[in-house]
Amino acid sequence: MSRGGEMVYIPDDSDFSSFRDQCESLEGWHCRYNKAGVTVWSQGQEESCTVQKIKTRISCKDVPAETLYDVLHDTSYRKKWDSNMIETYDIGRLTVNADVGYYSWKCPSPLKNRDFVTLRSWLPLGNDYMIINYSVKHPNYPPRKDFVRAVSLQTGYLIKANGAGACVLYYLTQVDPRGSLPKWVVNRVSQFVAPKAMKKIYKAGLKYPEWKRKHDPEYKPWVYPEQNTLPSVSLAELSVQHADSLENIDETGLSEDHLSTSDHEA
Image (cartoon, rainbow, N blue to C red):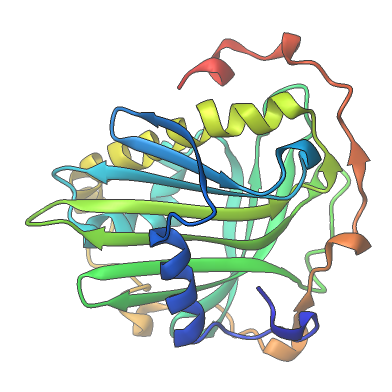
């Protein structure tokens, strides 16, 4: 997503517009899953089994767009619903609508766990909301030995209001996992992992208002930037995270025989 490949920059209106177009367009996308209100598409070469674009959509009844926007921003609440997350925290703020953060997640066994350092930006647009990110390097957060540092080329959410008190959520991701993955992993992401993740976000949206009433209900720095106490980060401290500068591991030989039962749930 970085322009010219070298300079770290904060996404502008044209980037958000392009992201929205990708979410809403069907051209060039192949439907991989369509059940119970959840649709998953992919774009790219299945045979390569590495960098693919995955897009998912779910209709969320009884969850207003602004509530889902809060859910996706609220790192304290994320620990309640994101069972794939190992750790997440904000590193620092760039502007009123951009920050740098860390996220690590459990991959299905027997794959190694991955982590990311990303520049994230967000934009409320009328009744719709967008959050997008891409990977950057921060000198104080180099790759760790216990994780494979993966690269988000472009990842984000589009939340569209859908009548009174309901919304449609799109999630689009293009990630280089830094490794050649077995074909079963690519299939599993579209058939199990992505649908399950979307359903979790929907359920989290239903439960969030009650949880937030008991947990610092007025604190929403993504809505009220004056509440943000993160240290400032300069763009000059950051550089683009090029995938080819990171360790590349070959996990194509791993079988799915050792998957836990939870990994099979859709």
